[in-house]
Image (cartoon, rainbow, N blue to C red; front, side, top):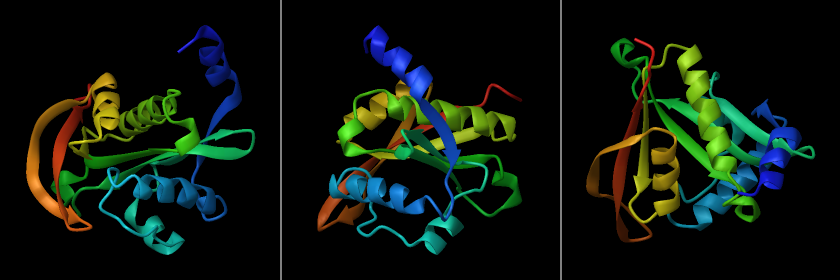
Length: 172
């Protein structure tokens, strides 16, 4: 990334909370991710109520430039059991036209910071094996591969493997 692009990122982007009013922008980016067939097992963008119930209120952020959300990320509980309250799954999506510009890294680093401020000790991600860009992004942000689930589910009749990644908090 050039120095000019780094300066642009520092100056022109802001982090916003995803809410009902801006969810349509998030849904558009989510739909682009679904269309890649390597971002999620979802095949349809959920409505606001479904999406709202899935993600934690502390970790649903959008990256905004010029009053438009260009990337988003979220944290979701991995279990309802009290013992796992500090274990969450991360999701990161970037607008198709903006991929490769470091926006996913900005979102993921912000999610890491949010998690550490909220006593979350383990971030997890399940990434399709062929989604090398996402695997690279997570590793770059301190995640490590802890294994994979072979043929965990099918997407449009094709078996998919999930690479499992984890980042442990530095806070004990």
